[in-house]
Length: 282
Image (tube, rainbow, N blue to C red; front, side, top):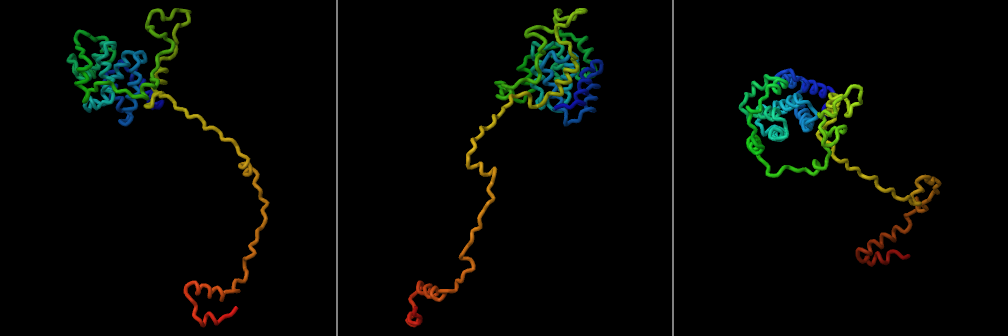
């Protein structure tokens, strides 16, 4: 989970739409240690899954960070390559967004990767020409960037029943476009949608994201209480009135009959000699 300081830094970088991509990523490396890259990229990946959570320029910067953090390794070693490829091959995504990702992956010959790093997110969207880009199919990208293509998508029981960290805006009715003209703010009228701070909402979402997600909580009920027995109540008020018990055989004279006991012990081992049998008369 990201702390407050890290959240403020990543939000500031996402809003740097007028700065070159390479300059943003250089600051990203200077501000965040290598050990924290995965946690930060995971939070960005969760936010990017909601197309309305970030502005277009912020989304481009987010995808650039996801790719550049693992650009020194082969693409299949990037833990977020599956998400990146799915967005690049999704026809519902914006074409400039798909082309931007494909250029980082090296699947588009429009510009080199170095030239792309020198441009800003705003300039890229303004100068984007969809006719100069080719968009390959998802299967083609998977075979190119995955070590192994699964025939069936991975399904996890706990992931299927869990609630996603990024939730839809409750102020927008289901199936409605929040950018529609009907939601425009009119002078002197109460806004139809929530008028909260977008950046504050983004910061809270990033700060609350965790690797565990929002899975179901398995609450164990309290065990039943056993009935109290009468025999257990004696321990509440223990009885300390004890009587002394004497051993009357303690310190008694045990020397009497010792000779007889010795003869009996010898007789049990073997027969007594005639002298011993006649020697004592009791």
